[in-house]
Length: 322
Image (cartoon, rainbow, N blue to C red; front, side, top):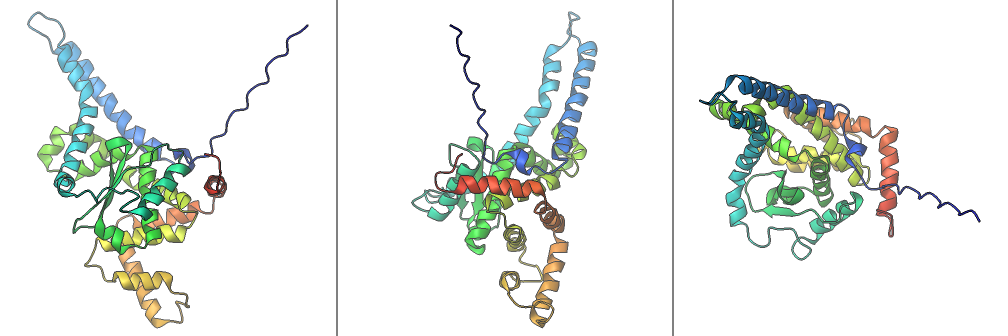
């Protein structure tokens, strides 16, 4: 009697959000253009050292060869350490309420849980809200990506706008931007001596021109998808976050908020028209802000955006697949 063959297993389709769903075209090309280019340069240096640098016995200086090859990744890690160090004092002074938990920041914790579910992550991302006078939000590599925000940012934005900012940071975590982004931001602000000591990252910064802008386009897409597909919400969040850190701007947070939420006809309302002019002037003053708004608007018109939104809506339903 012939044995029946086993029916082939159906491949489980992953519904959760992945970097492929929101990565901006050309982002990976710029990344490997920088990282690959630098590694080629330092492998070439290592090859030269192998043939030129000799011990007294005449054998190659393998220690110098290995150090040359390891210099680029070590330089990135050093940049990460040095960029986080200014925040170290704030972390040390932070009390137990700074870490976002269900008991002290229930709304933020619920947002993080929701995003973790949509992204198929078993662990809710850690987040800290620091009592600082400055306005900021960024992610550090600790524990697979830890989001750090200042209290003024959380207090000056509406809860749904804070959610959009968290969605943006989740994009950096999912797409693996965090270490390289910290390194490039740090080295671009260094003095010439430090830039020379961290030469691999300095070269990456030159070769990866535009990468920091492009990753923002990607992460704005992620925020759009995680917050239910509202480009208006994401654009409002990034503009208001920029304004919160620029008190000298020609428009106040209240005026900008009223302009963004006004139901009236802008062309007919003189006060709204004036606010629109000031809002546009501010947006044009902030580097890359208008490009981010336009890039997200274009993404919302694509079939990809509609397909991913529908998929995430399935997960968001009670009992939805992850």
